[in-house]
Length: 296
Image 1 (tube, one colour):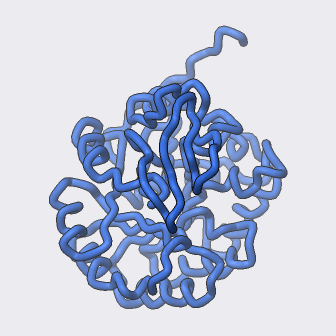
Image 2 (cartoon, rainbow, N blue to C red):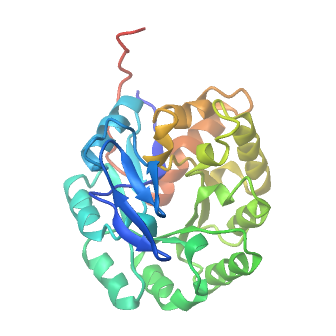
């Protein structure tokens, strides 16, 4: 039997071409992008055309034995609704794709397009999270999932708590592992106590502990701390692919958890796949056997 691994936080795009706060974001060649007016290595250098496609991701997933992935969106990548609609249609068993929407009509269009949730980079939003309450209500009614990445602002975390209380049946995934390296960590994780429908996913955890680097012992300790706070059944692994794999391989973004001696086999299984399978409703995931590297 193959292992069950699901990535609860990833990104796809055909091209980055947008502006955020008056600053440019634009795909270049060789994995580089203009990001907030600065040239950076956005993707691995072998993605020479700047396209972060589902097919390349699936190749990485198959190699790393990752059965399914949740694809969220970020304003820094531009609106990818049209592309993700096609990804969801072509690969319905492998991907759980989320749209971007800023009003109720856009939210309805996301649902009608077959996308399964809506993702918000709350940490980049200047308006109150409560201003989008009609959208959350609509999502609750339609059984969609809300992905929300929050900043360090206590007011914003309080708004998220109010949203959870107002929409008790809405499934909510708190991203970036509650911004674990900041003072907001415990307050964000505690949101999972508000409802059985709230989870915390670790997308970006290797980025947040980048200075420590692999095998990220402090990240393991933070997973242990969060599990002690709300239970391992409320936590999910996420990679933040593809930005994080400019520094490490895709498989490294989870195998530091597999190799840890501080978590039990049952805890690892829940964190790496079983919790996400239950929460997002993945079915018919492929069994992906281990393929030996020629260098072994």
